[in-house]
Image 1 (cartoon, rainbow, N blue to C red):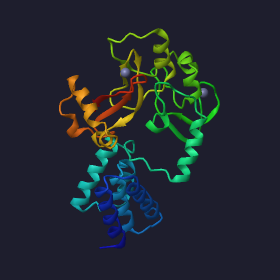
Image 2 (cartoon, rainbow, N blue to C red):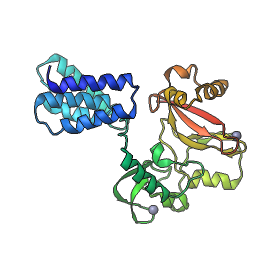
Image 3 (cartoon, rainbow, N blue to C red):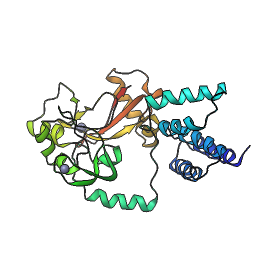
Image 4 (cartoon, rainbow, N blue to C red):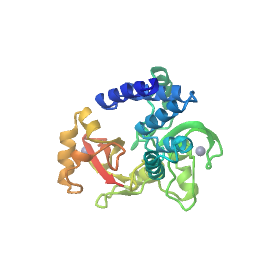
Length: 283
Ligand SMILES: [Zn+2]
Ligand SMILES: [Zn+2]
C-alpha cells in the first residue's frame, strides 16, 4: 500500500469515528492541499477519493477523467458513477472547509459590517451569502466581496446582489422581486412585516424554495439547515420533532433527516417566545 493511501485510510477512519467533526474535516482538506501538489498517479487517485469523501463530486470527476484506465472495467464503472454524481451534485454539497481560529475572528469582524436582517440573523453562516472575490452588484454598481448566493424571484436573472441592496429594499424595487417563495397561508401579518420578509430579507438555499414559518404573530428567524445530528447536538431534537410530527408532513424524519441531504431540515426560532420550529423538504 502506498503512503498516500495509508494516510487517507487513517484520516477517513477519524472522519467517520468523529462524526465529521470540524478537526477531521480540516485534516482532510489539508491532506487534499498536499496531494494536489503531487504529480504521481497514486497521489491523484487518492485525491479523487478525498474529494468524494468531502462531497466535492465535480472536483473528483474532473480529476478522475484524466487518469482512469479506460481498459479496466472497474475503473470505467467508477468513472461513470462519478459522472452521474457530477451532474446531480457537482461541488454544491461539499462539506464546507472549517475556518481556522484566525480566519474565524476575521470573519466575525467582517460580519459586524453587514446590514442586520431581523428574520435571517446570520446569512453568511447559513450559506445565503457567499464571501469571495469581489463582484459588481447589478443593483448599485458597487463591488462587494460578500454577495447573495441565490437569485431573487424576478423576471430577470439577477446575480451577485450585495447585502446592502437587499436590506434597504432597493433590489426588490428595481427588479420587482421577492426573496422568499412562500409562507404559511393561514398567517396574515401586517403589511410592514410582510414587506420586510419578502423584500428585505435574503432567502435560504433549499430543495423546493423557502417556506417561512411563523409564531407569536410574527415570522420566525431562520437559523440554518439541520439534520437529526445537529438537532441532537443542540439538545433540541425531542421538542422539535414532537412539534413537527403533529403537523403530519413527512413521517419518521428523525431517521433520515440529514443537513443538506436529500431530506433536509430548516430550523427557525420564534423571535418572541424563543421556541424552535422545524420545516422539512426533500429533493
Ligand atoms: Zn448593491
Ligand atoms: Zn413564538
